[in-house]
Length: 182
Image (cartoon, rainbow, N blue to C red; front, side, top):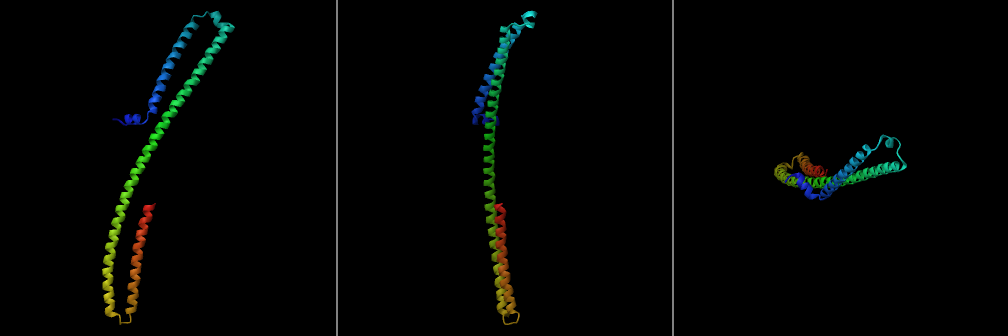
């Protein structure tokens, strides 16, 4: 089944548009036949009656001009209505396609972000675990040398590095969340 078939199934308005087009073609044929008959009648007129038409002939010609003008206005309005309905149907179809594509991409993005966020959390947890093991060794080292004059400075350095590390990890997570919020 082609895209055009799917499109026409989705929009019965186009079938109505086809009916309007068929009606207009039939009407066009009728008008063409009438014009042909009038042209033949005009050819059969004498030169004198063509140069000096009577009042009745003038009224008849004016009526034909008015009928043709009315017919053209009718056809123009019908074609405009048909084109407008087709454009609205196409616009609605495009809007539906856009919504579908947007929903699909948003779902894919959500899957990607949740997976990436989970992977990042797992990685951060592993890094914290390694850092804590490293910190444990630093505290053990401090315990050995705490009586030295530099012991307090070393302890201060350990606390500072701990705070810096955890603040840094938190800022990385915040940065990732900010990127996904964009």
